[in-house]
Image 1 (tube, rainbow, N blue to C red):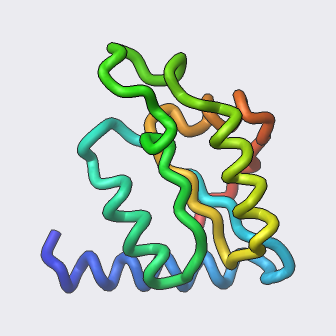
Image 2 (image 1 turned 120 degrees about the horizontal axis):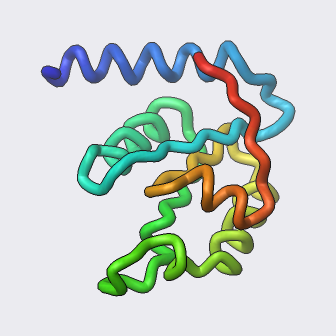
Length: 115
């Protein structure tokens, strides 16, 4: 995908996000995927377009353990997520491998809405 197409895609995503969510509370977005697939890049572009706070699960990982979920610091993820909610941004974007499992482990039950 060339940069013009990618920019148009990000603009369209941002437009749909704004149209689909009331401004009274932050929009919770979860981006999941394998390592190296462009999750962080996509999140940075969305944050640039709509604003918000990016919570990257990799930041909470004890690296080089041969696994992912057992080596995340769930207490810190929870604390930072709660701080993000208190800051009342337009969006909170959670990003990482096994995102739904991580959300479940920190007590968040997401609802699905496809835009």
